[in-house]
Length: 50
Image (cartoon, rainbow, N blue to C red; front, side, top):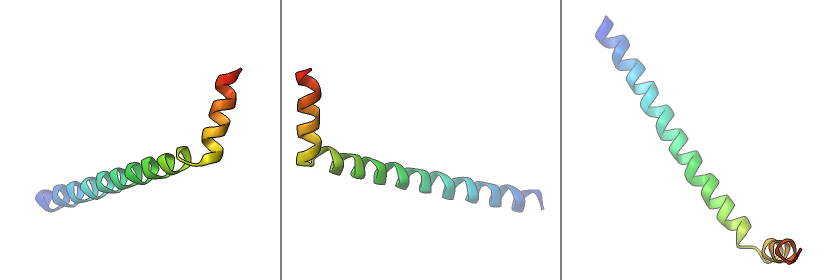
């Protein structure tokens, strides 16, 4: 019984870490997409001009 519970907890932890990794990859993709827009680059240039 203990082995089954431990196995279930390990499976849940593995699934949670896999989901977290996927979310991190998606966040990086979205961040890169935003930073590559023309409007974003113009805004950064204006801020650096100050």
